[in-house]
Length: 256
Image (cartoon, rainbow, N blue to C red; front, side):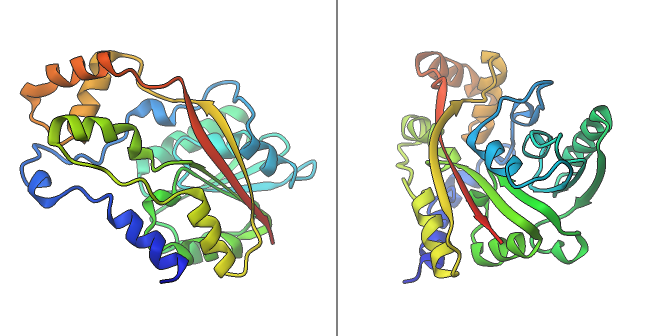
């Protein structure tokens, strides 16, 4: 079995069992807005450093799965032009508004990568932060990133699947054991099979979480496919099992 197939199969194992999904009162695939807010001052990280060092005094950044745009706006300056790709139009509205606030040229593209890649211009640096765990068919995704970069591609990903933070809750409420793969090493294996000699760096960064316990319980209850009347139980669980202050991350990059 090659690395790309192992990657796909490992992600498939994270699917929520149909017996649980069928009784969910609403879709569990939601994202708390706090995850996409762009601070006035963006704290630099290895991911931002690797992107910035590939830019000159000016330049362009293509941010795939851009959300609010932290990956792109960490590079402005020196970048003077940003392009954002996302399949949620509200994220692109946030991205464009942030570019206007910072006085940066901007262009946005609504759709899934790489399906819309042919309609998107290339850029000096291409970034994709916290996206790859959502991509089962990983080789076309990575190929399109490389094809759109003049200088470098920079990925950022947690060292464990982002849903791993809820593994204990799934065990508690559903007696469901969650997987432990894939990992950044698995992605490096895919890139190696593609003939891409990528570099990687492991590091720790602050965990971006909903700090309001009631809001956190609401989002978590939905993500766990639980009924509204169980929100109090989820709140008690979260109070007893607070989210860690730090998360373990990986930066993976390669030059083109």
